Length: 62
Image 1 (cartoon, rainbow, N blue to C red):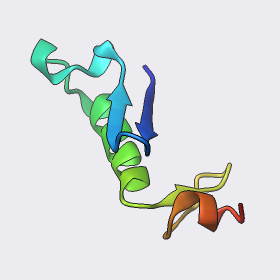
Image 2 (image 1 turned 180 degrees about the vertical axis):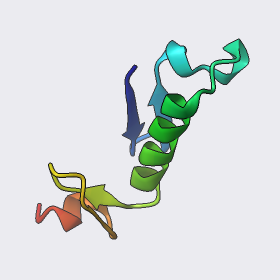
Image 3 (image 1 turned 90 degrees about the horizontal axis):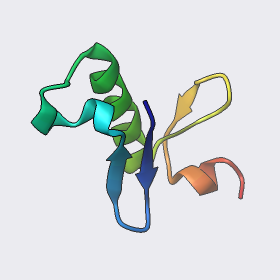
């Protein structure tokens, strides 16, 4: 399964494995969606998974 947040379109892109119209909303898909919703709200995380607020590129120091 793959998921990402596209800031250019403000959309969460998620693989068909998690397509709600196919009835595939299990705990892993729900966790992926919550993770990407965190990015959509401006959150970021480091490689260890520690979250911090703010626009993610700015928060990473770029």
